[in-house]
Image (cartoon, rainbow, N blue to C red; front, side, top):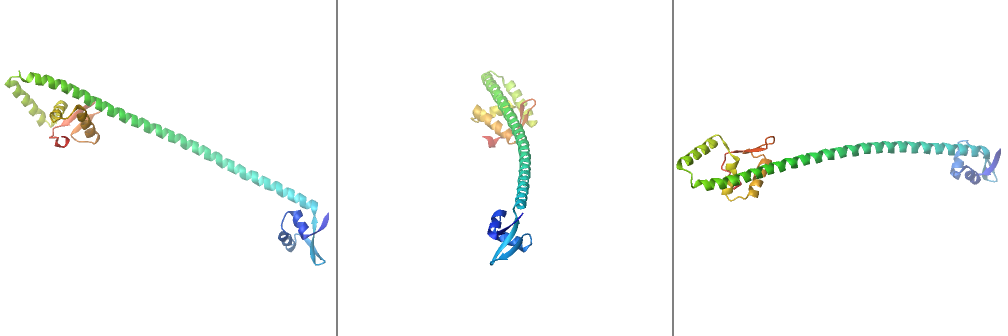
Length: 209
């Protein structure tokens, strides 16, 4: 049923502005008449209500669709973040294990050096005690043996440790010198991780004293 309404009343019924009502009149979407210098339009209230209700339902469906898309996106983001978090935990665990292995290797190296220094210290005491009773011929043989070692380009680790001790180095200082040299890749020192032994090239070692 058509009802004749002013443009203001029509705007209120339709839920739009007065300019919107005039636009519908101009585009022939609403029929209008002029009366006493004012514009009135014919409006089917029930039809407009039904149309507004349908538009409202469509709007709600659009909102639901957008929300569903947002929820789907958030679920994907959560799965991706979970995957990244798991990978990061695995990477950190692998790095941690590598660091532990390095520390274990360094501790074993230092322990080996310490044990060799202890052996050298005991040997040195024994050698110094026997020096007074060593015949000249035995001293000559010892010098020959030392010459053979030097000619081979290698020196016993005991000889190296004894050399540093004679230069006034303490056990801890010697241990640190060995550790720093091997860690820095000093070509004069070779560490065998399998046999856990240290080989020393013959040198003046002036840089270490």
